[in-house]
Image 1 (cartoon, one colour):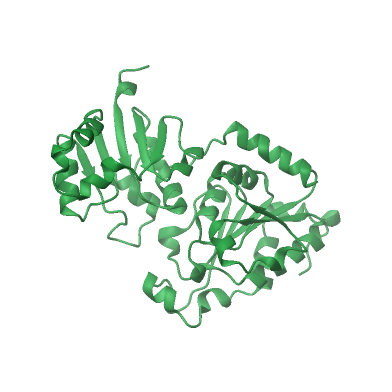
Image 2 (tube, rainbow, N blue to C red):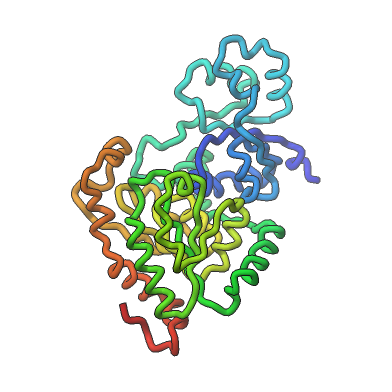
Length: 336
C-alpha cells in the first residue's frame, strides 16, 4: 500500500440517494489517494468506490458534536484522532457543531453547506467545487456493480422469462409525490411498450411507494419488484433496454449505470438536478412558475409542469431513441 493510502479521511454526508449519486465524482477524488470512511446512509455501501468504506451516520460520536462539551468526551476524541482530515457537508450552519469538529480534528476539518448558495449550478459541480476540482474533473458518477447483485439480476431475468425480451423499467415514484408524473401515464407507456415491442415492463416499487399505495394499476401488465438493495436495483437498471422515471434518486442511479434513461422533470430545476449519464434524455415543460421552491412545490394546485406532458408526448420522445427502433416488431417503426 502506498504511503498516501495509509492516510485516512472521514466524510460526513447526510443526503438521500439522488444527492449521493451527484456526490460520487467528488467522493471518488477523495478516495484517489486516501482511504475514506464515509458516514452516510449505510445502504450506499453497494454503490461506493473501492477505497470508500460506508458506515451509518447515525452514531453517538456525530450526535455528540451538537451537544455541549463534546471536546472533553474521550470516546469522541478517540474517534476523530485517527483521521488526517474531516470533510463535512452537514452542520455548517450550527456553531456548536462547527466548533467541536474543528477542535477535535486539530483544525483539519472542512465544512460546506449541503446545498450551493447558487442554485443554478449542478449539484455534482457544487460538490466538486468544494474540493477545488471542478475545472479538471468533469467526471460522471461511476458505479461498479457488486458481483452478487449481477448474479441476482441474472436469476431474476431467468425467473421472469425476460431473456431475449425488450425490457422497459419504470420507476413511477420519488421521495416527493409532487414531483411524480401521473401514474396513469406510466400505465399508458407500459401498454404501448408491450404492444409495439412484444417485450416486458418492470416496475420498481420502493418503500415510499409501498407506503403511499396507488400502484395496483400495474398489476395486470407489469412485473412489480419490491425490496431491492441498491446494488440489485443498479444491476436491474443496467440491463434494461430503456428506463423511464421522475426526478428521483432511482433516475440518477439509472443514469449512473449507463442505462438509456428518460427523466420527466416538473417543478425541479433541471440545471441543478438533471441526472448525468452517457445516455440520458430529460423532458421538462417550460412553464412560468417552474422551477419552484420546495414550499411552493408542495402546495401547488395545478402541477402544469407535469400534467401538461401527455403519455403520447413522452412515448413520442422514447420513440426517437436510436435503440428503440431496433426493438419494435419487424423493425418497422412505432405507432402511438
